[in-house]
Length: 443
Image (cartoon, rainbow, N blue to C red; front, top):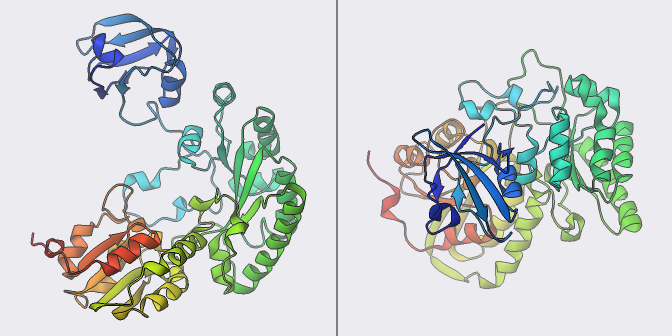
C-alpha cells in the first residue's frame, strides 16, 4: 500500500531531500507502512531506503543516513493507514447494537483494532488477530494492551460473544504474558451470566497471570431502549451492587496482601447504584482504569477538596445551573452543597433524563442535544448554564445526535459555559465574573 503524506516539517530530513506534501510513502527498507507504528518502528534505523511516489507518479528510492534519534519530519493524516480492524463478534451485550438509529455513521463502527488499543487504550477482544498481527505485537512490544475478557470460561465466552474464536482467551492472554506484554483487562458484567461463580473463576485466572495482567476492571452492562430482537438482559439492582462491592473489596484485600497491589477494581456506577460512597484514593492504586469510569468520582472529589481553601467566602450574587445525567447527580450534590456555602452564590443541579437512548440510560456522557434542549427550553434564557464537555465529540462541540453547542446557545438563549470534568474547570466556570455577551449570538 502507499500512504499519502499530509505535511513535511520545515528544514527536516524529508524537506532537505525534496519530499513534499501530496507525495506517497510506499515503504521503508522494503517494509510496507500500514500505520504509525510501522512508520515509527522502521524509521528508527540509522540507514534507510525510502520508496516514495511523487505526486506526478515518479518513483523515488532515497537513501538516508541519520542518527537513530533523528526524525524524518513526515506528517500523516491519522495513525492507521489501512482499514481499521472491526469487531467480528456479536456480543449479547454489545452497546453499539442497541444504539438509536439515525446517528453519525462513525458511532456505529465496532473498533476492535490492537493498534488503537496500544495507542489510545481502547479495549479489544483478540478474536480477529492473524499470525502477522501477533508477530507485530510481539516484535514491536506493543505494551500495554487493553483486553475485553468478560469471562475465562471458554465455552461461556463463545456464547457471550457469539464467536467460536472467542474461546481462545486463556491461551491468548498467556501468549501475551510470555512475550512480556502487559495487559489491562475488562469484564462487562451481566447479572446471571458471567457473575457469581463465573466471576470468581475469571478473577482467579487473571490474577494467575499477574504481573502481566496489571488490572481487572469490572463494569456493569449498559442497556438502552433499543434491544428489540436482542437477548434479554438485566441491570444490576442496589442489592446486587452492594453484594458485588463487598466481594470485590474482599478480593482487593487478598491481592494487596499477596501482591501489595489491588489488581481488581469496580466501576463507580456500582457504588452509586448501591448507595455507597466511592472508595478512598488508595483503592485505585494508579487509576489505570479511569477511562473505564473507575475512579472518576474519587478523582473529582479529591481535586475539589484540594481547592477548598481557595474558594471565596462571598461573591456578587449569581445563579448557576449544572446540566448532568441522572446517575451523576448524587456525585455532584456534595460539591454543590459546599459551593452554596459561598455568600451570594446559588448553584443548582439540572439532571437531564435520557429519552433519546431510553432503557434507563442515565450517564452524562450519553446525553444528547435533543434531551438537553428539552430540559432547558427557554426557562434558562439569560442564565448561566454549565454543560460538561464529555457530551461532545472529542475535540469538537457536536453532540451524539449532531446538535451543536451553538444550536443550544441559540435556542435556549442561556449563557452556556462548558467544563472539562475537573473540579478546577467547574469552579472557574461558576466563579468567573459576569457573563460573556458573545455566548449568545444570532444566526
